[in-house]
Amino acid sequence: MTNNADSRGIKRVGVAGAGLMGNGIAQVSAMAGYETVVLEAREPFLQRGMAAVEKRLDRAVDKGKLDSADRDGALGRLSGTLSAADLGGCDIVIEAITENLDAKKTLYADIEKSLLPDAILASNTSSLSITELAASTSRPERFVGLHFFNPVPVMALVEVVRSGATSDSAADAAFSFAVSLGKKPVSCRDNTGFIVNRLLVPYMLDAIRAYEEGIGSITDIDLALKLGCGYPMGPFTLGDFVGLDTLYHVTEIMFDEYREKRYASPPLLRRLFLAGRHGRKTGIGFYDYRGEKPVVSDFVKR
Ligand code: CAA
Image 1 (tube, helix red, strand yellow):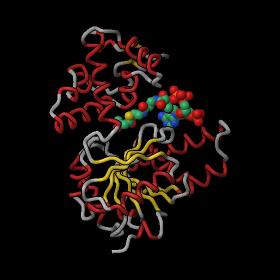
Image 2 (cartoon, helix red, strand yellow):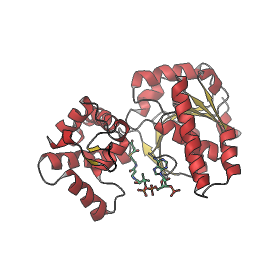
Image 3 (cartoon, protein in one colour):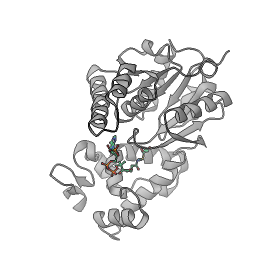
Image 4 (tube, helix red, strand yellow):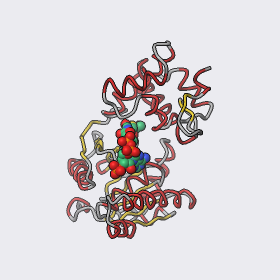
């Protein structure tokens, strides 16, 4: 088998999922000069994702940070589809759909019906096993994790994750591809949480436990980590930004893998998840965002 993507270079990129992560990845891919096709399951989700990219690029032009010709070029390279067959000519497809194992496996089977045999299939999963995802495809040697960070256009890091089955050529091509997007990739082994979440998630959960133990208020813990450590956001603001549903699901998967208390969801996080208080995207999480300025939500005060 020839390595198509490796030998003739990656030219056409597929992104499955037009949500927050998917539309960010599509944006940086199109901006880097790749023909980029975005696959979504439903038209309104596709429209919303494409509109988000256009809005961000328009804002960059308005701020004088991007030439309008570059914006037009990027938008011209970006197209959307509802049919997995349209990813057939892609040299790499990055899946960025919901963190659901079965949904991802079903999608891969659909994409692989028309995908070039030696194209790379990558997942942006933050917590599922790359080994397990790879094993569900017909190309485990060409399957990698490419984990981007939110907000994708701003955050420089990409974790390039290989399973025991990933070939050197696929891992190298994925690494070079991340560099070509203007990102700083790091390589890591397939362990749940990779590098960042392995360290970040216990920190965020400990902040919730510190609050539950009455060590400090939500705002004081946030301020302490911001000013004391120079973090751009405190742990509660970050949790609301990432999404408390996402954080909760990640903790469940990490606890299942490691069976250690430091990965277990504290009761308050579980209650916020169950109550649909998922942070910024729902208007309420640790903070209530519905007013002019975020204030600590009544839900966590009670
Ligand atoms: N999407 C795109 N661009 C955004 C953005 C967004 N959601 N939010 C801010 N930006 C851009 C702004 O447009 C601005 O760009 P310019 O400098 O070109 O004008 C730049 O980011 C800085 O924005 P602001 O001045 O408004 O705000 P800030 O300086 O506070 O930065 C931030 C905002 C970049 C989000 C910063 O607060 C930050 O780095 N926060 C931490 C983010 C983080 O830790 N992300 C990782 C989460 S964990 C994860 O993603 C992994 C997982 O698996 C769960």
